[in-house]
Image (cartoon, rainbow, N blue to C red):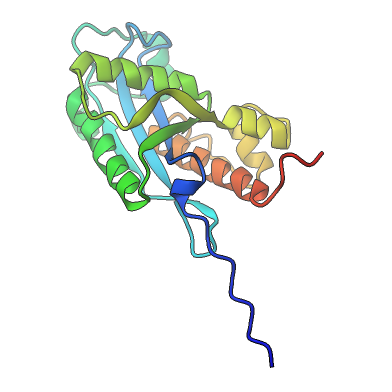
Length: 212
């Protein structure tokens, strides 16, 4: 009687993306110009692996941030996000504290997976990365775990898979649903983007990209 075939070992995260840990990030801001507009909210979700080696969203980290000195706000942006700056229920923190609220759990997730750096995953990812980098520069943060310019963009991923580039439409095409009342909040958008990334990435697992 032959011995049962052992299950295939799961490839650890550290071996999947050159030692990088994918971390989904979304920011809400006071405008579109990262050189002058304020960072107002940020959320991040490290990507984890389940017992079968599939990608799954981790635990969300989040911070409401008070406008940094020297930054400005376009009132039209607040009409979209619904953010009420200075509201006592927002629990605003300064920019340095807000970044630490994201970086500390990200670095813990990196250590868990033996990864050397985080790589930002976002929908229009360079928008989020540019605001993140601008905040890091303002507070002279020395412990930024994210790669300074490389990203994974779910706009490209969703465009290839579903022919959709808008996050809401891509999420619906992926069967994830979309609540417009929750949209433009950093936590909800981050969680939906994380689910979208995992859905697409899991669909590609095991495929040979060299095969036409």
